[in-house]
Amino acid sequence: MDASEWDVLAPPAHTVDIAEETLTLSPLTLGELPALIRAVRPFIAQLGGEPDWWALFCDHADSLLTALAIASRQPLPWVEALALDDALKLASALFEANADFFMQRVAPGFDRLAQRLAARLPGATPSPV
Image (tube, rainbow, N blue to C red):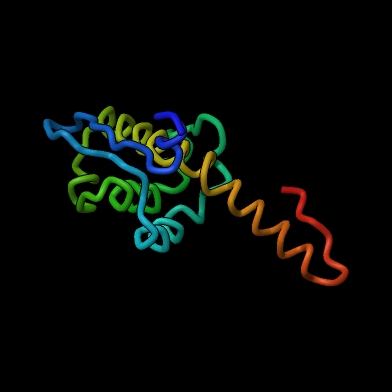
């Protein structure tokens, strides 16, 4: 395996400077997922491609702020106190830190699981995912 293949399995953490602090961002752990999923459920369909952060904020401010706090591992009041430009920078950095991991590692795993389950269930049809 070369270095880029290992990065898919265990993506490296990266840092970003937000509000005079240097945050180390890394993909979420299994234990962090339930709370994040609850927070993003209202707007998950809008996260594909390049999200429109303004629209997300206008339509789902509380959920988005909660998701940013969970994903950044920062207290909600810290996220709420961010300047708008820092909040957008944080949202973009967190999306990038986790999107690659989910698209390259998690989504294909769910696809394989769905195919295996469909093959075992009588009369089941494979998911179009």
